[in-house]
Length: 120
Image (tube, rainbow, N blue to C red; front, side, top):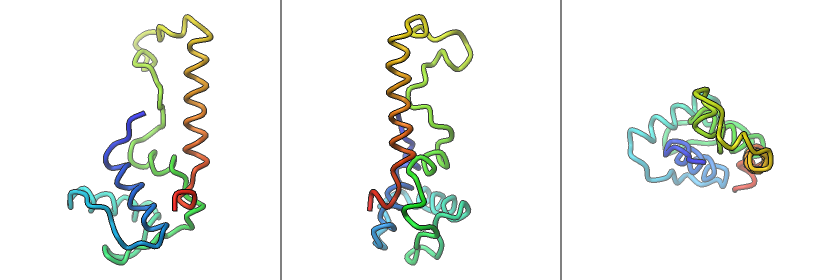
């Protein structure tokens, strides 16, 4: 699974706010402004830069929802061929494809069940 820089900085920003820190991560200014704007518009933060606070309780915000906000649907182990071009080669082997299905399910469950409070 590969996260975008936007997701990484958003999660870092939110976890710092969950820890009641006003220290925002050092990111490129234009990127950070965009991230804060997206988080504000989605109802995760409120206030002006330097006075940002969480708009929701840390325990109510999962890591998965923040990644989805910035990167779209979570598909940590989606094979390229599953995009509709042809069957995935590993689909020929139930045990092999089952292994990766299990790994993906574990990743998704972990991201869904980890909140900002868990990271604070």
